[in-house]
Image 1 (cartoon, rainbow, N blue to C red):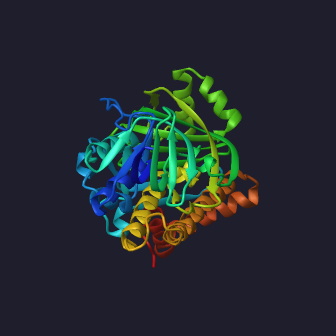
Image 2 (cartoon, rainbow, N blue to C red):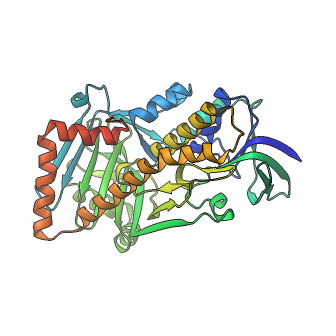
Amino acid sequence: MKGFDIIVIGGGMIGLAFALELSQKKNCSIAIIEPNTCNPPINDSFHTRVSAITPSSHEYLVSLNIWNNIKRKKAFVATKVWDQNSHGRLNFHAEDEGMDQLGFIVENDLIQSALFEAIDPSKIKIINAKLDSLLKTDIGYLVTLDDESNLSCKLVVGADGSQSKVRNLVAIEVTECDYDQKAIIANIVSEKPLENTTWQRFLSDSIIALLPLSENKASIVWSCKSDLADELMELDIEEFSQSLSEAVEYRFGKLLLESKRKVFPLVERSAKDYTLPNLALIGDAAHNIHPLAGQGANLGFSDAKELNSQLVENDDKALGDYLVLRKYARARRLDNELMAKTMTGLDWIYKENNEPLRWLRGFGMNLIDDSPMIKSFFQKQALGKSNK
């Protein structure tokens, strides 16, 4: 039976980032278990799954020496929000914080590919298999795969997404908030330029985000009530393109659907425990949130960085030591839950359309927009910068 110090379950962006950083900072044996390819194919056309990478995540990826190997990334200098049902608007700009950009829109597959290419096979073994079972031992876990092979380790790291099998196998409970919404993601071409800006429009029944991939191409995330999402998915390309153009008031001229549409239900989840003895959850395995602000990947990278920090700083402790893992959990839970509850609150505020709340919403947006100090506070939160 092959033994490792650490076994990471899940070879997506967050699992790869965690393993790569650990291999650069700590002398230990690492395996990544992933049934699918860890190195997705890169096409000339843009992929539909993207992330809005904050300055903090940008610094993290630079520290891993992989940023320059990400083949495409689009810097954005502004974020603009406007509301259908009030006079409210919000305008954030990099200049307000003395920055060159607010962040980057990057395709998830390109980040994952760059992370994979940086893996040193002498330090990290990637095993193409599915997790079958976990058995607690005195010093860690016995990991059984679907090919009936057995591995042992001192620490299991669950980075296997929102439907985490690791979390399920060790019976960590999850709290859920079903939004009764679905998100439609796709890529579009715009008639008018997108101005290096991310755009969000709040409507009575949905929220639309446009994330620029180039001068005239963008990824959209259209978060809708479930029945509306089903109707939009039934439209043909021309009808969908017209509905989208109308929904953002033809602000960018005509928008044309350029990719297949994908749809997925929106559910906020939070694991009641991020850690057990010899086991930790990171990324969507520990928490996943409404995509309103595109913060999911950023929270995952922060998890990976914090867990590594605790493991490296407590090098004198046994790998998998519960008190060390608890320090990671305490450091990350507040930020993750604050972001989740903020997204849930914003979603509720924009779904409620009675007249007093509409007026208050518009007033509040404009108050923030006209108050540099308040606006700077909110912008720092979105950028992943500390106000401490």
